[in-house]
Length: 234
Image 1 (cartoon, rainbow, N blue to C red):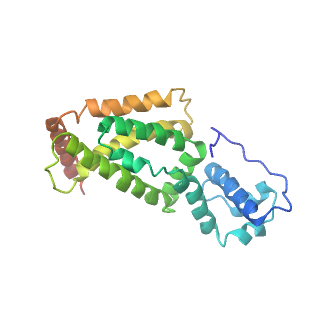
Image 2 (cartoon, rainbow, N blue to C red):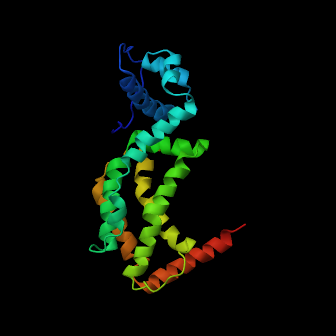
Image 3 (tube, rainbow, N blue to C red):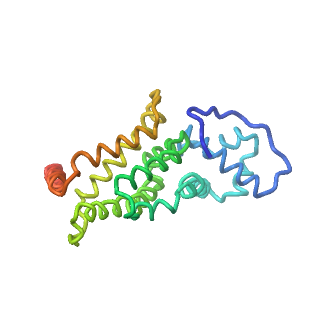
């Protein structure tokens, strides 16, 4: 499902005689657009009004607003995750730079979307826990594996020490740099008229050509991050 840059939510004509399964899918689809526009503080009564159905119809399909939000999470986040991304990050027939370039190009194609980005940010602000759950997927399936693969690629495979927070933060920085393109477009409303594929490729290239292009540069960068962490610690 791809959302428009600025969808307008309007009252929909009442749909009668729909199968239960189709009605449920319709409610989820409309809820995605509604929550993207109004945030999770939006009321289900208003959602029903915009759909042209009674409020009670929503609760025939979902026992609570939280249950509806959970289905929205599954629909827009879980089902967009490509399980092929996990083995891609570990595929040593490609350089790590090539692997992450391919991952972020495909990732951007799936998540750089009005609904996806706005619901993600709204969830984080309202403490619904969806953002934390999704970021845990990114952490365990992308960030940590990529950090370990970088060690191996820089001939540090013998380093069996646990990954440091500074090492992980390098890759969170890369992830954030890519995702910020979507933040600028869908949260700040900036006219981001760029070729996302080229922008992502350049972002990953800069990452690998910069602070982590050699074992010594990686060590120096990790040490700087570690020192910043100590300075910033309460």
